[in-house]
Length: 232
Length: 232
Image 1 (cartoon, chains in turn brown, orange):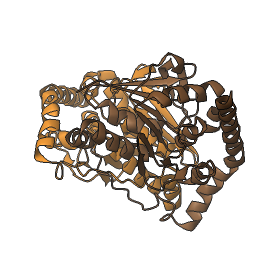
Image 2: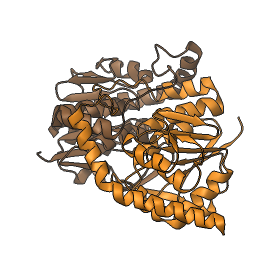
Image 3: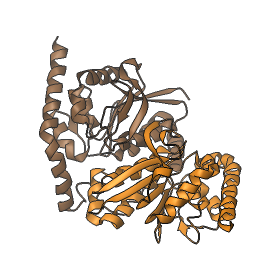
Image 4: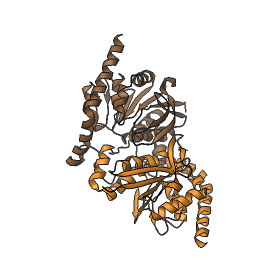
């Protein structure tokens, strides 16, 4: 197996499960080296309140085979972090695979990495991604050339198994699926906006809508900065 | 909603996804307070290599509503950690719900919390749990009175949604499922030992078998200590 470098480009208030799912899958790929990185390195607090330590600085990261950008409550602040977005752009332009989970695709869009691409997003943020001219795909895992994106949070596990099969072959992916006993059996059937009860969907969507105007503005500002930058 | 105290009893080399899944689900239950605890508190390195910080000491934790014990490569060492097992027993005897994910049920057994109970376990460790007189159940989530146990790694998400429905009602569980977009669609079908190809299963099982004799001895020793303790 050839070595495989995977970098998770994190930021404060990221959703931990967005990257823990892919981390656990990709960590088991023979020869894989996984790096957690953020703009400042060191410690990072996820939106669940859990704190991680030992992160490296994004500026110190060499071009990886895979860059993965997870979503989270902190996406809005990350979109405003000029240096963070610049680092995502630098790594994403050179990486073999540009990937995201959940609302991480908004960050890829801000970094100019989804031009002319199809991409997935957490269902509650699909409209915002579509506004940016991205061909939003409702698939749970969406492949478009070297861009592979997953839907909301738990889709990261499906995304990572799919990427593993592409990178390391079917049998390696099957071994990892079995080791993680990934034979999901939700006891409820409300995991997609189409199948959740209307009242349930309305309450979850209402929470996203509260954050929508601010996040939309942060995304538009980031895209304007990227456009100005490319005109310089 | 009444407050809900959940404690994750962790140890070095725990599998991060075993507790991240339940943590993300239970964190979203209104009124829930989640605590990561270990014998020594402070920092803890998961078997994936990720380091967490800010853990509290188990000895300082008051009786929770839910104690959850995840599995991981570090289970063998945790079984030998007399103080850790004693703390799990103390908290488990008083908690409203005693729970585990993956090989965490071996720790519950060592702590004497599965006497006369049915319980789940990561498939590769079911035989070891059965040896301890526990009625091993191949279900992904197993309820037996106040003991709720999940199968391997990713079963923690199913376990936590099931517990949420019991604790906080169906609609809250549905909201959380939708917020996490938990509509799993594995691209492969090798997540259970019954459906994985024979060669794939053999390779994953071979790795568990290497660790089996040492883990078995650690579990037997812990059970002997517990029996001696209860005779004193």
